[in-house]
Image (cartoon, rainbow, N blue to C red; front, side, top):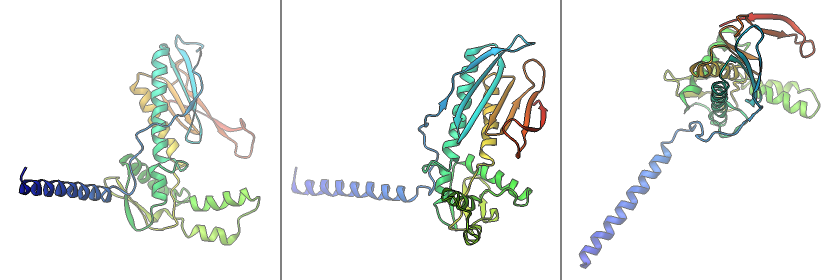
Length: 272
């Protein structure tokens, strides 16, 4: 190869390398501040499937418990095909785990956790599903006049820290935390893919709404997998499919907050 040819080849290689480097840098800079949910599914603990007779019906009762979203999740279904139930239950538990990976405060890689360390006055890209749940939660905040407030985490942190030290939080600590509480300071874009937090010290907590959404999604998955009669309870959030397999309504007790576990203020009958 001539000297001129070698010079041309060297120039081409250098230009190509620089182009790749610029493309990579621009790609990194254009990445969303909050990354989508991790693709890998973290393991969760699930108890063995329990099967029993269902009195007054040709169906069998199947029940299984998992440990997810910082609580226990109970699923009960009335059916005949054990293999179908096992498949449907696993699909429902997997769906709940997807939601946990997206909305957990206890996983630093979750999109919700990244919002909480993102900073103020800027929109942060989130999975559309998370944006939808935040938007719906904000609607509940407005409907309750702030009795539900998904920005209460800074105040909860104060109380948890004080409890760990076996003391009551100081009024100054409470006042300082309240400066960073207020659902009005959070907004979600119309396409549900951008969340803006207007205060550096704010943090979102979906503990009051994410489990209910997870129960709804578990019921949807069960129904799509052929389950006609089911009950899902996720840390007190409950959802049903139809009546029970024996035709009776599902029964759920309202715990007496001042009583022991199992002391109910009332028992509700429900079908869906």
